[in-house]
Image 1 (cartoon, one colour):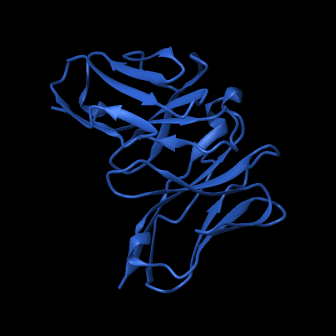
Image 2 (tube, rainbow over the protein chains, first blue to last red):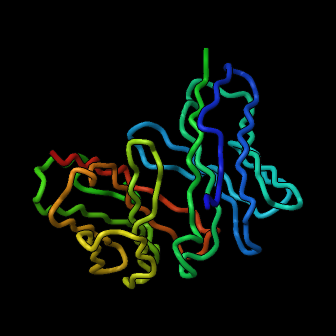
Image 3 (cartoon, rainbow over the protein chains, first blue to last red):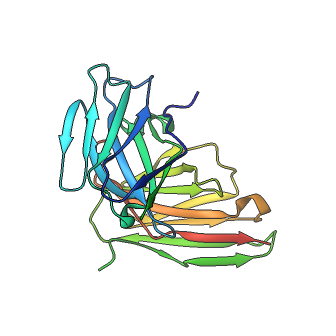
Amino acid sequence: LAKTTQPISMDSYEGQEVNITCSHNNIATNDYITWYQQFPSQGPRFIIQGYKTKVTNEVASLFIPADRKSSTLSLPRVSLSDTAVYYCLVGDDVRFGNEKLTFGTGTRLTIIP
Amino acid sequence: DTAVSQTPKYLVTQMGNDKSIKCEQNLGHDTMYWYKQDSKKFLKIMFSYNNKELIINETVPNRFSPKSPDKAHLNLHINSLELGDSAVYFCASSQETSGYNEQFFGPGTRLTVL
C-alpha cells in the first residue's frame, strides 16, 4: 500500500502559479509533511514542511486540509529554473520503522517558456 | 564547504566485484541515511543510522553493508555486485530521527554495473 500518491508529471508556463497535490490517506497523527525538490544529477533539497493548515516561506506555500489526507505545494509565478522533480515525504520518527519515512513517486514539473 | 559529501560521484564496475561508497557530513547531525534511486526516480530508503547505531534496515540484500565509524560518516559497502544494483545512491543526514527534521542530501553516486 503506497503511503503517498502524486501526479507523475505536470507542465506549466512561466509566470503561472503551480499547485502539486500529494495524497496521503493513511497519514498518522504524528506524521509531518515535507516537500523536496530535485534537479537532474543532484540530491533532493528541502522546500517546505507542515503539519496542518497553511505554511508559507520565501519559496513556496503548503496547504494542508483539516483531515490531513492530502497536501498541496504551491509555487507562485514559476520560472524555467523551477523545472525539477518534486517529492512529497510523509513521516514520523524513523526509529518506529522504515515505513514511517516514505517518499512519494515524485512529480516531474516542466516549465514552458 | 559541502554539507554532505559522497565519493566517488561515478562508479563503473563489473558484476561480481565489491565496491564501497563513502559519505561524510559536517553538519554535526546525529542521523544519517542511504537511499537508492532507480531509473524510474523512485527514492527508497535503505538504511538509517542514529549516533552510529543502525535503526533502519529496509529489505536490502545482505550484500549491502553500511558502516558508521563515527557520527559524521556512513559508508556503504556492496559485495558481489549485480546488474540490478545499478542506480544512483544518495547519502543524507538530519539532526535527529524525527520526520520533522530536514534531511540534507549529498550529490549522489551513480553506480553502473556491467
